[in-house]
Figure 1 (cartoon, rainbow, N blue to C red):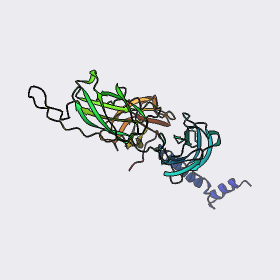
Figure 2 (tube, one colour):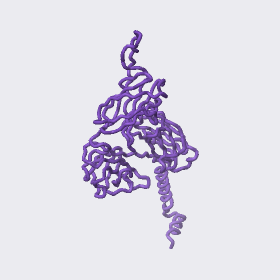
Figure 3 (cartoon, rainbow, N blue to C red):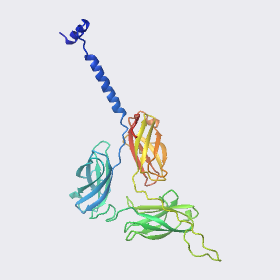
Figure 4 (cartoon, one colour):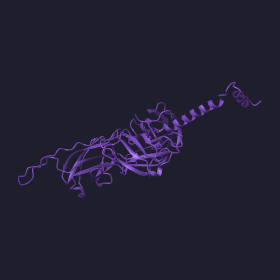
Length: 374
């Protein structure tokens, strides 16, 4: 006899009732609820890992310091010729990021690259949209960072004195040795990028140097002037500052019994920014808006914010607004999702300045209503 018919007949006759269908219905509801919840939760944000070079043993090993790495990821480590960023390089190891964040690791230089002057190194996961970080190093024994053997730190310079409309004198600090810096001046706020070339500075033994440059005719009446010193490498050394275009040195008394101009206080140099800007996705209203929270943004910068298809990192995307970083650091901002991306499952978002060498940060989010920040 058919068991289902038997159960139904027993029910009609006042006997036992079958609970098979109600139980299956309850289980189905639970599964559907779990699926909806699992889709609604993730508005997760990705970290942007970086690596710096800690030390090199020529033709043998390189030690790197990882920063901001995601947890529990396997990174394939490759090395290749300078300029390749380690893409399609020689596999030298696999590193598990463990709890993530910061860690140090040492890798052997592959036989194929021994004797190379400079070597690129890359750490990358195997996902379709991978986490990755890359850098390069001089293949000679040094306890310093990549770039110049033995050199560590960040070059800076301060404004020593100004002769209004004529000259400015600067004093460097921690400049790398044996480098030629092109010195440019431009409008205030440009950091001297694409400015007017006013001379060069050869750093010699490096460290502290003093040099004077003429203010170009185009800027002789400007109230404030930006000045920059930068090498010509693909990954250049650079430093920048700015000054009020008025006389700040005591000088000698003028002719005709006129006293020397009253010295004006030299403005303190702006703080040197050395971080990496990032942002997290804090909240999403599906097809409507996204709220982000920045971290370690440089001060006094205007970032263009764009959104695009997932996987584009927001490059060439739809412009949705701007962020003025003000004092820098942590900021919160909300942007509308453009109509062209309404209905997309995942969306890339990017914030980038307009300089030739821009500051930028990018991330992505599920286009589903959710809040993940406290």
